[in-house]
Image (cartoon, rainbow, N blue to C red; front, side, top):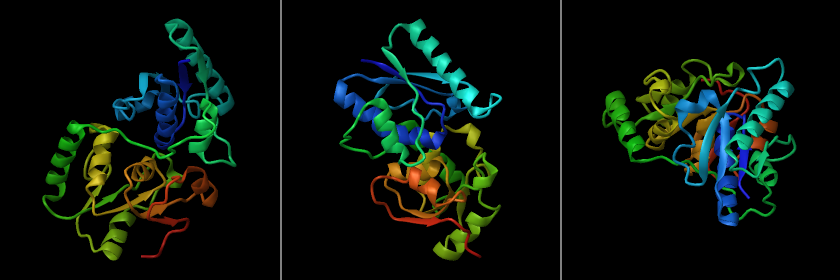
Length: 255
């Protein structure tokens, strides 16, 4: 049994897929393969994952088509074709997240795992990512303690206001030095794994609902401030299974 997981979801959702991929391997002895979005190729999120056989890239079901239903059907058909052409896969699975259920648990069920042993997400960085992170940190803040900030996510309704993260960390954590994604370094010049390693070294984190929030859960890093502009229901769908120190905000504090 060797499935191809058709997964045209967001980068943060890809982090939430990692527990099911790991569990499938330990349950069956087989690695899944994953088809994710073409625009995530440079992120290299899955490149070091030891439980994935092959990685394929597809169009964006949400944004590259007339509507999402057409998009998901087209992307699924593409994955069927990949599976047929390679002859390495027994079936294709397209997880469609359920509004009433945690995405992590939904992924398990869609892959066929009813009673997961360990639902904790993971990220998989390597020595190169640590080294590159050290260079960015040294260039931006030297040896000083710093906060990690993300402001823009690519989805405007999820973003923090410009300058908010810096101001919050200075007021609430006393941090004068900040490394902000896309401001203090160009995020397109580094894999997401390198960016995770920068965040790992931060003394505090101020972020919106994004892949970095999910990465904090994966590395058991406290979240000093995370803004879920889309409300409690979205948080309930994507929150970590394990208990972590989190400061969840559905409305912004006044600074």
